Length: 175
Ligand SMILES: [Fe+2]
Image (cartoon, rainbow, N blue to C red):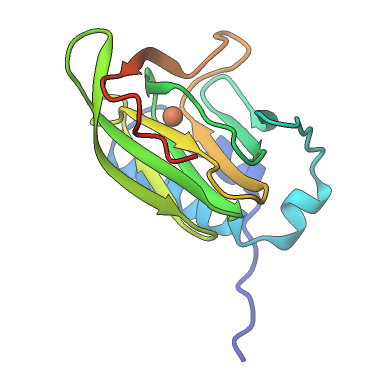
């Protein structure tokens, strides 16, 4: 049996992430997230708020460049269709989420182009230059928890979302 490698000091690793959001940044953020979602103690020690039919964002870490949330997704909860003004990396800690990818038709509407189920241990990263127009939803009957590293300071700006869109096809969310 393989011994678990020496755990990463997450706060130190997050403080060490560069402000330049490029491919090297995404690779470093990915390594941190892989370790975070594989750490059974991380969420056990965190204070996670929950809502009956919504998702809740819980700050795990923040500095002037990055904000890390644990997001608890109640069954049936969903984001809007949106993109981000900053980098967005996330990993699945428990449960499963449906991630739908969209293509903008104009400044207000978008059409579905791809759907993927994100499962525990899976990590995804994207830069603000796109393509990063997506929606995340818990279409299962169990809670899901994901951990997100955003390249923005939540104390200076309220949201990582750049713009929201309406679905050109209203039947694309399989709740
Ligand atoms: Fe997003």
